Length: 113
Length: 122
Image (tube, rainbow over all chains, first blue to last red; front, top):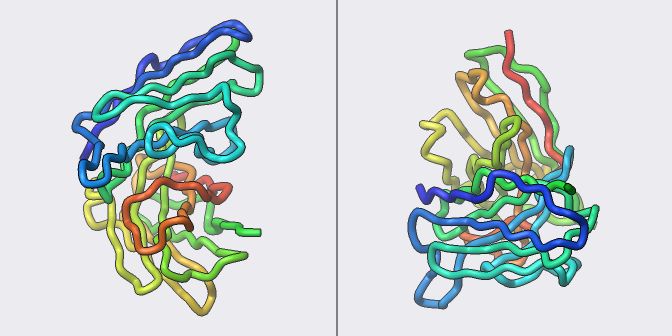
């Protein structure tokens, strides 16, 4: 299985500050035949299912605010919130779908300082 | 409006079998992949497996053949059974899918049910 690690485990920042979350894959999730990274990002709030934010590492799902961005390729990926808002308090997960046996990262908790 | 709804017992005894059903509304089983994903308390989600409309399946190897996913097209449902459960199987179980890529086994999940908590306890 492809193992995903995330850093940091958690962070607390002030409203309006920048948030950066990293996701590292144990092997490349870049499919060379179509040059796409099979990596998604989700946001999960308490008692809710995960909500898709990005797919193909950087394609924003409709309705996701522009302050969120996804980047990276191969084995290293980043989710950035340019200006943290109160409604962004959540746990964020990366997920690979390069293999049928899809795996998720352990999550990064984002709180307000 | 497309909707997924999980149902099943919330409490299962150790060594017994967990059985859950996901009922679809707003879409038929069709040429899609229907997935179960679970999430243990305080942990990241874990993909359990999937079934297609034709009954083809694939499972997370970590479940060591304890999981079976089946589809009932007449009821517009798919189901999960997990045998010989232990406390480690305590989790919120979600049904999840994607409609943008029929017949594609490798895709991200953009539709999720609300989830159902299953606790394994004597």
